[in-house]
Image (cartoon, rainbow over the protein chains, first blue to last red):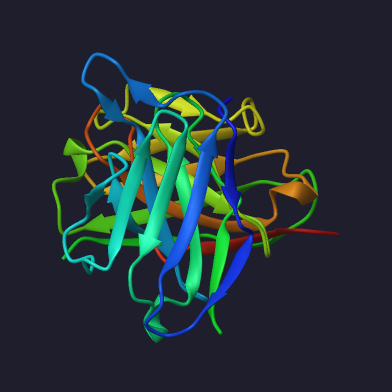
Length: 113
Length: 121
């Protein structure tokens, strides 16, 4: 199984400041035949179901604010919130879909400083 | 609007059984693979099982293989998860989620609101 490890486990950021979450996979999730990274990011607000933010490592889902961006390739990925808003308080998960079983990172909790 | 509505959760004794349902609306159900993903209290997300759009392909996490059975009724736009031989570590909120394509298993979008399964004596 591919192990997904996120860092940090939690972070507190001031409103309007940048938040950066890292995700590392135990093996590459870059599929050479199409040069795509098989990685997604989700946001889970307190008491709610997860919601898709980003897929193919950097493609923003329709309706997701452009302050959310994804980057990285191979085994190292980053989710960036460029200017943290109060409604962004949540736990964020990365997920690989390169191989079965699809696996998630342990989550990163983002709070307001 | 795409909606997924789970039901069937509850309290069950260890060794017992439960069947979860997920009613889908707002999209052509048979065109999409579907999955179950669970979240133990205060913990992260764990993919449990997936089924192809036509129902011919089924996949399971090792932790539930041989105990859980995923199925679907495309005429009723409903996904199921039959859970047998339940254990305490199966306690979780179970989410149904739409896969990205009929026979491709990529990201999950959207998710239902979840149904809580508690396994305890």
